[in-house]
Amino acid sequence: MTTQPPSRPDKKSREPDAAALQPGSSRARTVRSRDSFDRSQDDLARLGALVRALRLEHGLGTRALARRATACRSTIQRLERGQLRPRPSLLQAIAWGLDPDRAPKLRRQLLDAAGENLAPDTQGWRRYRWRRQELGMATGAVPLPREIARRVEAHRREAEARREADALLDGLGALDDAEILARAHELMTVACRAAAEAGGVIQIGRVMYGLSW
Image 1 (cartoon, rainbow, N blue to C red):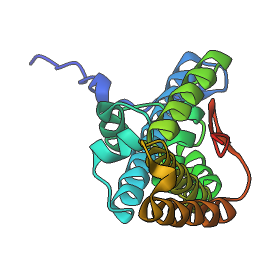
Image 2 (cartoon, rainbow, N blue to C red):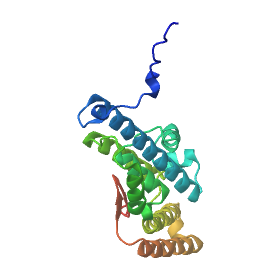
Image 3 (cartoon, rainbow, N blue to C red):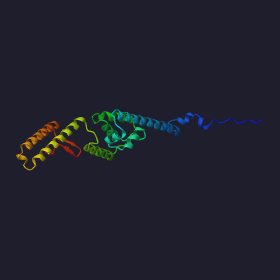
Image 4 (cartoon, helix red, strand yellow):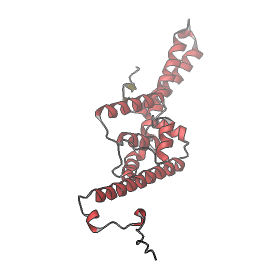
């Protein structure tokens, strides 16, 4: 009668011995690395879900949020899918794009959700992000805080009324035409009221409002 040798446990089912999981062992480092990776993925998924929830709360599509945050649409989509490790400057731009009046609070929420899963933010990246945001504000793609937007709009009304009044008064014989003079007076009154509403000069990056006259 042949005696069968005892079967060996399958390698995959073996329990690691205590020594293998001692601090400093390669197995312990592997387990910690895997746990850290899982936590990182969970944080990125949580961040992505938060970005999507905030975007929908503000009634924005991915394309609209990308424009307001001066980012690529694919960047927003990857972030929402938990596939992107963002820089703090990107989260700042997204917070501003969602609601400039609540940007500090939204930025804090996004940073807390990201945890330690942030790409380094170099000086060059911060300058790049600020230049894009500055250009977006000047062109109207990036929203302004409500009070600043109100004052900028008042400056624009003032400038438009003054231009129209000047155009009327530059016409041949305009100074002898009572109707033209009356209309120019109305426009200048509108301009003065708008200027008072706008307050002082507003500078957004390299663009200044309220210095035309």
